[in-house]
Amino acid sequence: MEEIKNSEEKKGFFKRLAEKIKANKGKTIVISVVAFVLISAIIALCCLNAYVFNRFATGIVPTDEDLEAVAGTYKRVVIIGVDGTGGYPGEMLDDDEGSLPNFKKLFVDGTMTKNGTKLNASLTYEGIAVYPTISAQNWTSMFRGVRPPYHGITGSSSNKELSEGKQPNEKYPSFVKVVLDAHSEAKAISSCTWDAVNNGTIEDSPRVIKMNTDCTALDDIVSGREELTGKGAAELTKEIRDVTAVDGFADPDYNLRDAVTVQRIIGSTTTEDAEDYEIIYMHLNQVDSAGHSYGYNKQAYARAVSRVDLLIGRLYDAFDGAGMADDTLFVFCTDHGHRYLQDGPGHGGNRDVEVEVTFAVSGKSVKQGTMGKYVNTDLASIVTYALGVKSPDVWQGRVPFDTFTALE
Ligand SMILES: [Zn+2]
Image (cartoon, rainbow, N blue to C red; front, side, top):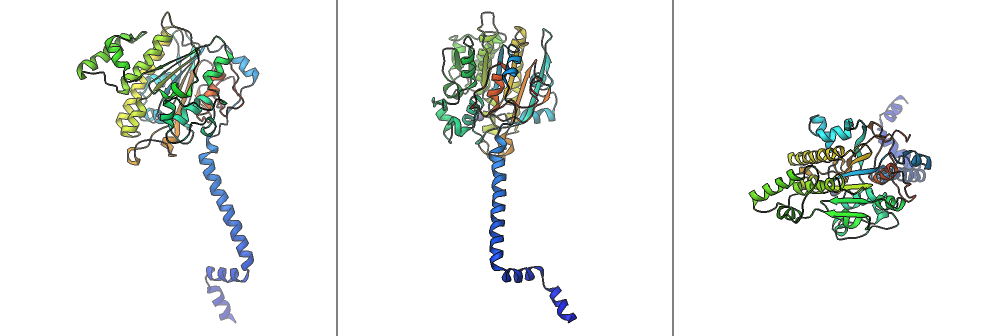
């Protein structure tokens, strides 16, 4: 008797399990199917969470009272769009606090204008791009407040199509159109090194000035067909002429084209005879170009971000010099990051370095510190809120928590 019991105990766990399964065949099949369905559902939910839910905005929809309270705080929103920067400025500042002095002053620490207004900064390096992490999809989501299946700029040829003038679904207007529709006197200006945002994303209107800094722009400046104006114009013109004198041609490199893109804004908005624009947009391309050539985190990529930092300084100085920084909301945004060189440079996928984006605002009603969850569809709602304009119900973006003191 004792021996039989011992041998029973010695039977392996799996053997006993097999015997039990044999005895309860029907029951086992049901349990297995249920377990399979449950595990599949959990895996599907995890994937959905990564690909879909994580990209859902979770911030605030300002009420009519919120909009009344903020109205008049800002005369304009200045948006510095830097293609392909990802969360990299955060890594640069972690490595070397002094590496991006202008970005740090305006968008990390906050700063005091020459007239004594404190501009506070709210930022994140862990904002989330829409999927796929392609430029056309993301910039259109940023301007139109909805994810790609809604605005309709989708597919792997989207950059080319948008550049050639493909129009997003008009059911989802850009923040430019929403502000101009709400403010009948308002005007907007958009200066882009990459032309797709002007050609496709932003609707045409007699009250929107669009400028694309194409490859011939530098030749025009060298030959005198275009004269740059505003603070820093003479120095930039000399730099372009010097490069041309050495190379024998105007190098269509993005470095100088981005500088012209910013200088055109300085000349159009901060000089004595300049127009008053409520929305001022710039699109810079040299960081994305460096990412495609060398990969995320490489020296050339870091140098491109540093050169953009100089342009941010030049832009801010021109605004502050003209006494316009006090009632401006400054925005820094980017569409996506880049892969490391060893993974094949480029973007479009779901790696953290492709998905995570830097997003920052600086202005007198901004809540100093780290903002709540930001996704790229949120840009549109932030711009309209700052200008006291109601965002369309169809937008999916929100104003992230901890961005503005008056919104809690
Ligand atoms: Zn891009």
